[in-house]
Length: 399
Ligand SMILES: Cc1cc2nc3c(=O)[nH]c(=O)nc-3n(C[C@H](O)[C@H](O)[C@H](O)COP(=O)(O)O)c2cc1C
Image: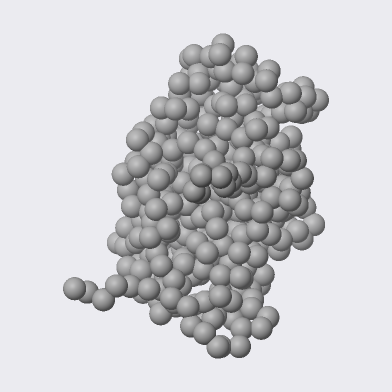
């Protein structure tokens, strides 16, 4: 790892006990070692030059904090309301597809960790476990993510299932109708979904993952299974079929229609532009997630945290403002809150934990983020969410 001077060599945690992971990057390293390259690349990669993927990190790194001293910060808590219900930290688990590749019954495993942390779990349309099973986890705040397919009937079916399952919110992803271009991921496959021989052989060098796969079988699209055509049930053929079902003509009229048929909270995920947020307000959305899909869709766009300050005054009083993409530290959460976000979603940070050790790994990821966020707030001199604002950030005086 990094060398400091001549004799200090730093390294990450090399064991398998999630409780001993000190930071998210320890969990990442544990996941990297357990997972075959093809799966880790899927989890990690971004679109094209990965400019946006990198920018999601540098944008947070470049925000400097300005602490205040001597301010009674005993019992710092960032708990409070998150879309109408209390949460110990304003954080939710982002929707991610194919979690079953990272861990057997990966959606259930990740959702159990979310329930234990008291935070919402957003289940992906392309999840591997059926939404009804996940939503039934005791104590879970279940939010259902929706990719809009061309078939109106398919969309209606998913929406009514989410309502029957008791989902608290529908999270409509609006930046995914056209599939992003991820060359590193593509190179792992000979044809569309058939891994190259080299990648297949490499899988054999990850026996812990292989044994789980053999024992539990290949994951399937648990939520979409009842809607797949004959012969498209396995993940390889279903993936190709699903890509063709996405609706590239998704527009605001369709969102307005969804608003009419969905009676609970509606969240639009994947906006960046201020005028899109204004439109989301007019359509009656309850929240938006500023997101660039973790750098996996359009490369070259800004990081959501860069647009936050411009969007926050527009959203205030009209809808909840959530943000994701690039959050790897509790201090990132504090920075987002200070810039006006009402909450954050975390994608890869929790997935590293899941891929490292299942539910205990994901629980560790959530705990690390919460501990770090609370410690950062305390070091800043802020004992609560209300105390976090732009004055917690350092800005150079204009020259
Ligand atoms: C492996 C992976 C799969 C994803 N699958 C979905 C998905 O099915 N639906 C969706 O709306 N977003 C999906 N996303 C995007 C996430 O919801 C979220 O926007 C992103 O991960 C946030 O960035 P972060 O990973 O840097 O936290 C996925 C992201 C990853 C990393």
